[in-house]
Length: 128
Image (cartoon, rainbow, N blue to C red; front, side, top):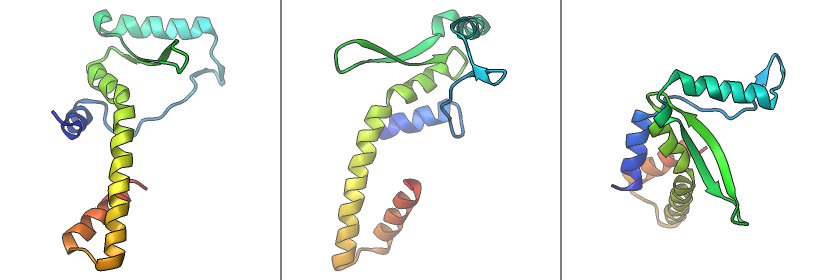
C-alpha cells in the first residue's frame, strides 16, 4: 500500500473536516491536573478501554514524548494513524512541492501541456 492509498483510506475512515489544536479550558481558565485527569477518565469510560489510543514519539535526547491521545471512539484507530503519519505526510508534501517547483520552472522556460498546467494549478491551490 502506498502512502497515497493510506492517506485516502484514513481520510475516509477518520473524523471529517478541519481539525484544531487547542488548550482545554474550564470556565475560561486553564484546567488543573485533576480536571484533565477527570476528562481523560470520563473519555475512557465512554468507549472501549482496549482502544484508548495514544500517539507517541522519542525526543532528540532519547526520552519518550506523548504527542496526544486520540480517544476510543469508532474513528479512533483511523485518526491515530493519520496523526502518527504526519511526519511521513510532511516529507511527501515537501517532495511534491519540489517536483511542482521543477515543473513550474520548466513551464516558465518551455511551456507545459494544458493537463500539466491544470495539475500544477490544483496542487498550488491545495497547498496554499
